[in-house]
Length: 112
Image 1 (cartoon, rainbow, N blue to C red):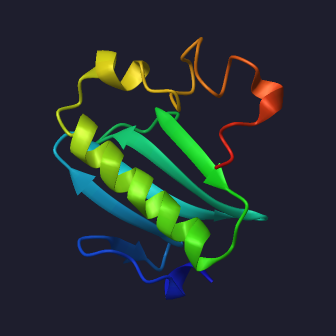
Image 2: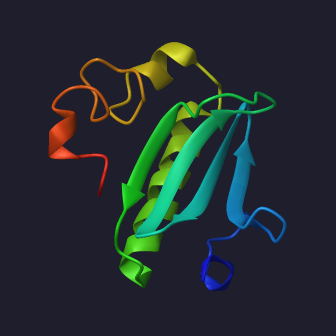
């Protein structure tokens, strides 16, 4: 269960929405549960829209969710300034033509 994950310091769990979140500067990262695993997503703070970055794991294990928290922390560190050019160049950006969601999508490299 998502609530019982051992999150790093600074992450907040929402009972209402069943996700972990952390805000840094102009971005927010969420970790939420999928049927077969977990996902980490980055959004611009204050915007309700599609996520900018997304990665998934099908491992409902400590190793799987720790990997997502690690990626989330990395995204917060790298993109807290909200620089859209930097974010759009990330391989996990949902519209990057060379990223894992567009190029060779059938390889499913967004599953880590």
